[in-house]
Length: 265
Image 1 (cartoon, one colour):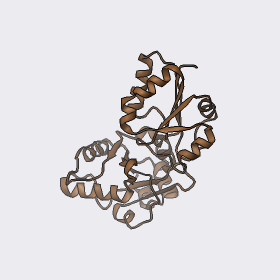
Image 2: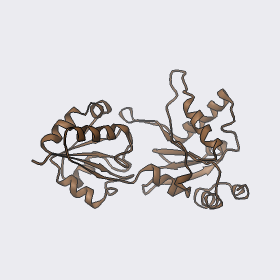
Image 3: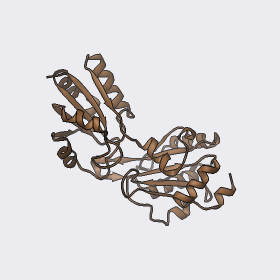
Image 4: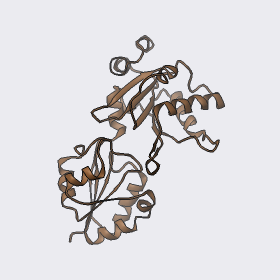
């Protein structure tokens, strides 16, 4: 058998998001692993993916990926596929796995997939180069709310940059932070820290199930968004920075943002 580790990004939705070359490569694999704790594939289950690929797929927990031993040992003696939702090289654990393969002398191939980092700005009509640091918003638990997400969004805001806010996923628990929970998180954070990050006139953009047939993009002010149907998980939140007039028009036309934002750019 051929020693090889094949990384495949499945894209944003369903079993048809991977490239044709990626599908061919997976069909040639002797064993396939998958992880869906960093990102969940919308609109498809593992069974659906197995039918398309024609191979059994072992789904790994976070600890199994981080330990890496089984994946690397298998890849030393056979062609192993490692599949993830979105793109395959955006998580540090995946990069580390690639490094381990390099150190073990295992050949690696990478098949990229569409990720939230390109699909979300595109759907909203926002320019990717105008985004600052990406922020992850964790579930508020045990009376503890870390201030770092608030601070990082504030830093982007001061620089006039957009912020993409990724919402917490607990795949093993079936928990997915909703857009409304994220908005409430930020409003409660503002009430706690009061540094002017968000108020009732702060424009926010919500993306629901990006890349799927039922994708929904909504833009508006916090209190208004809390009253709307924003779609279903998975959600991504964006706090725009300084808007170019074309971005403002896009948010009005494609996301239902208040028309007054056009006059403000």
